Length: 274
Image (spheres, rainbow, N blue to C red):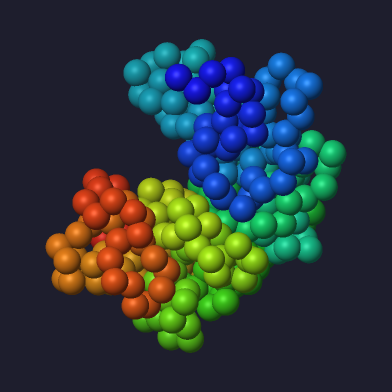
C-alpha cells in the first residue's frame, strides 16, 4: 500500500522496531540506503537482549521435552549473545548499556531498553567483564542508581513513593530519559510511559534479583516500579475508568495520551501482582 519507497526507508526500519519515533533512532547516520537490507546501522541493546532471552527460553522449553540437540543450540546461541552484550554494549562513560553504531561509537540516548540486559545476568560468565562477577554487580548497581532511581532521569523513587520526583517526570520509567532533549515535548515513544516496556523492565529486574545478593538493588527497583505504576494506572482508572495505551509521565494528566482503553495498559497495574 505504501510502495517501495517506504519499504526501503529509514522510517520503515524505525517502524519495524516497534519504537517508531524513539529518539534513539533520530539521525540519518542510522541508515545506509546503498545496502540491500535497508536497516538501521545500529547494534540495538534492547532487541539484542530480547533475542538472547528468547533463545534461552526456547532452550529451556526444548530441554523439558527432551529435544536435547536443539536445546543445546538455542541455549548456546542465547548465552553467546549475552556475552557479547555485556562485553560490547556497556559504556563506562554513560554508566549504562547503550546502543552502538556499526563504526564502534556509542549512541548515548538512554531509554528503558538499557535495562533489558538484566534479563541475562544469570547467563553471563564471570569473566565476561574485567573484575568478574563483582564488576557485573558493580555496573548494574551503577546503572540502577545513576538512571533508574535518578529523579531527573527515570524517576523511580527507591521506595516507590515518588519522593523527589518532580511533576513532569512523576510516575516513573518514561520511554526516554527525562534529561534527554526530546523529553520536554513528549509524544509517543518520546517520553510517554508504556505498559509493555514496564513489564519487560520488571522481568529484567526480577531476573537480576534472583541471581544473587550482589543484585539486591534490582529487587528494590522491581518493587518500587510496581508501586509507582500501580498508582499510575489507578490515576486514570479512578478519573475516567480508562486503561491507557500509554500514559503521560506528568503528575497531573487530564486523560490517556493514547487510546483510552487498551489491553496492555493494564500491565502497569498488574506488576504489583507478579
